[in-house]
View 1 (cartoon, rainbow over the protein chains, first blue to last red):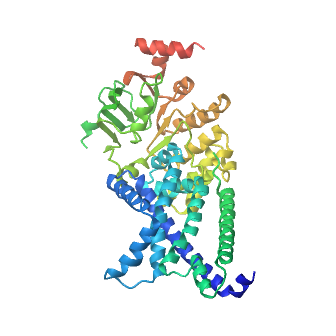
View 2 (cartoon, one colour; view 1 turned 90 degrees about the horizontal axis):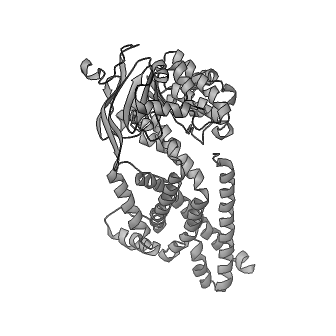
View 3 (cartoon, rainbow over the protein chains, first blue to last red; view 1 turned 180 degrees about the vertical axis):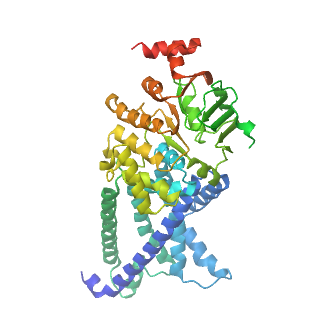
Length: 215
Length: 262
């Protein structure tokens, strides 16, 4: 307990940054993943190819490598200076978006074909059918696997610790300098992650109950 | 489009209520080896109610669905109100808005309330305000007898109620023609009549309708014309009275003997 209370500042700062990185990359991944997911079921060939190419390229790259590209590759380009935290958010977002896209695509496939036909029959365009009929039902169908994607994202944020982003995964390194026992620190960090995931699971159950589609 | 282009190709019916609205010319469709539509020609005039009858696998549903391009065709031309059916895209969406469609499986939007099912098209496609769309939707739901269910979700309704909502949803777009693809085939027997009554009312009000159905009662009561299809071809095209009492082709006689015997 002393390890926690004596270093509360480090824990608070670490987890605050973890949550920031998580929330921004989650929003980014949700936004990009929805677009890519829609592209993958588009009737337009080139859209599908770009979507498929993106998913295969990024999803098949280890997250650590992706972080490397952003942390060491980006600064070499002649682009505006961006903090490591922002770069980590981009890397995590791009990476997670592929999982969001694939989860959503699975969800779209669960929506009965008749829903899309009825949408087209009243004159909705492809975009309108997607946003008003297919995506809302697809999202509801994939709440549990989608939440797993975001739980994985939450834990993946610790990879950023390796790239000078002082989030929760970095707490052990900071506290080793203060002479705290590493194993105790790690247990505390793990406990907080379990609590955060429990919150996400609770959100999942709430969403599932509220958004259930009756068939 | 030249007027001569939309003149009937093979239709031998002389009684017309109005000018041609839906014109199907020389269309063919294959599913792989299977030739599901064989050189189909048909004309539906404004205000006309045409019933398409035939054994399963005769291509009647495929023909119905081809008219708003839910099924593509291999060759031939379909025009609606003189406009050739466009390729996929905005123009097609625009045209589909004018062609109502009622499905065998109802296909109400499962995540939207009954009222939202009916108002979605008018709001998103026709640009009506929500208040105007709801007023119109309530009037239509009243007309098909389910206005007291407006706030419910589709799954909470009986099949007959769902199908009546689906008809209201199609009517909300003020379509030029309504396609009904076996609208009562998925219903329990006691619910068939409530849907047929709505359809008969529509027919009496002068709506142009193309109805794929096995309901001989509806065909007798409301149809101006019966098209009998078998194996992808139009075999007979005549008045309901003539078709039921004096079918010309052997296939129609055989079909009628099978369904009218019980």
